[in-house]
Image (cartoon, rainbow, N blue to C red; front, side, top):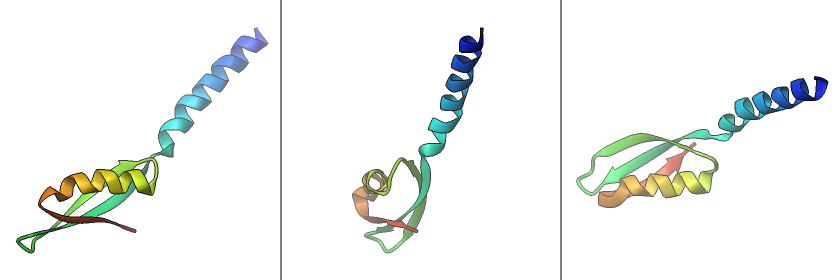
Length: 66
């Protein structure tokens, strides 16, 4: 019985901790017409956030801002 409770507690802890690994980043895009767009990118790390941010910049230049 104690092992079952411990297993369930470990499972619940894992479920609540893993989603909090993602961080929100601000993606600023400067379009070729001079306008600026700001998007929120949620990613695991800055490198992946920059890749996701670049997808918005198909018509301009995008960068992650702190």
